[in-house]
Image 1 (cartoon, helix red, strand yellow):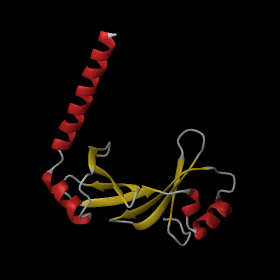
Image 2: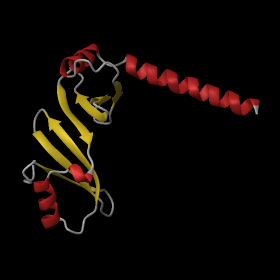
Image 3: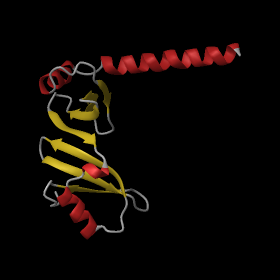
Image 4: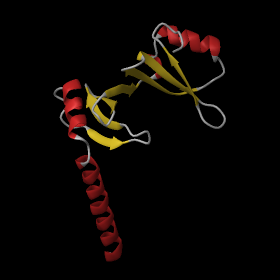
Length: 141
């Protein structure tokens, strides 16, 4: 029993230290850019993603968001998951027409520095799921 408790304690300390160590490495320019973009959001969780972007995970009005920044502090995009019922009607119509047999596995509202506002709809399929990006009016990006 003592070994089990000790093992959990060591794992907890290691995990906590790793998370703290990661957030300490967030470049100050990224932290400043986040605060400039989202003033008043004081508790973001940062992590470095597989593409080398700094991801800030935070909540705004009870919803979870993810904002990506380049290492130089340049904002890349912000996205949040939405319910299927929140997908704009024009996009729902386009999906019904183009992919009537596909099942939606995830929907995200995205605001991008380079591509503007769009909706990223993920469909289930064999192998890797398929992502299709739509503008609010139902046209593909």
